[in-house]
Image (cartoon, rainbow, N blue to C red; front, side, top):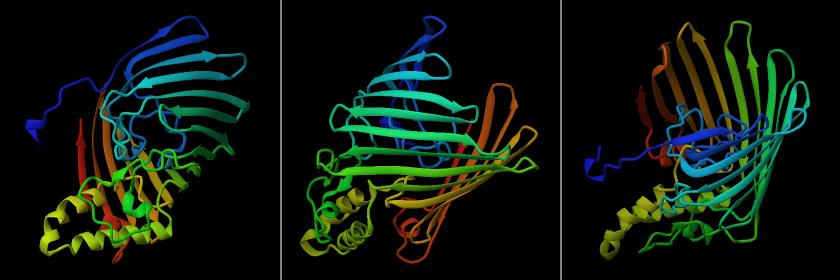
Length: 332
């Protein structure tokens, strides 16, 4: 705990006003998440840090951002939303903070069992992104869902050495940033998932995620080369070793560094106890495992513990390049 950097403030403080039966307005500091999916969330564009997800962050503990949300319920089962935010934190491409944005969403039920979401979203810097998602109850036990987001340019951080395909790049200033925000390339982020509920109450989840904003095979090899170059710095360049390795590792997060992943989870409950176990597996077969246990038998109070660990061989992503191979979170 770094008490010298103690930060005091509200994570969330907001109020929702019902104008009439159809229109409501939400104002203040809050998280507005338009995501479909548990681990992979292409439509999670309005959350202040789109890296987080419901598994690694079950209580939605990230800081909210100042914003206003207008929600209108139209004829039938169609809902329209307009969201405008002003994230006043320091702009940081690694943490996805400091970006102002506006988004619109339409959600409608096309059948009794299927709803479709369409969104358009734009950061104050960068191009317009378009997205779509669906959820459908296929049988009483099986639900299918998926979503896709397409945007020209991306604000997701990347290392300049990776971008330039230069594994020998040694920087004397931070080379990590949103260098691709206006590069003119189209980036696709998509996922497909299913949820199956067994007769004994256990829930099984499976998702496949593809995010073109992550590193492809060539970029991944360059990144590994960069890390090796920086670990081997010696002589007059020894003082550059620590800052360069820190910049390399700043790209790591639970969302993963690469483009393709699969994820599975089983969850269930016994009385007031809830349990879950999940694994996110990368292309190199390394994995991030998470186990959770929580208790909700005390009225409006929840307590729980999450344990994260990683497995993999040799030079694999989650074994060698993940920031930590073990993490315990206790919450109240």
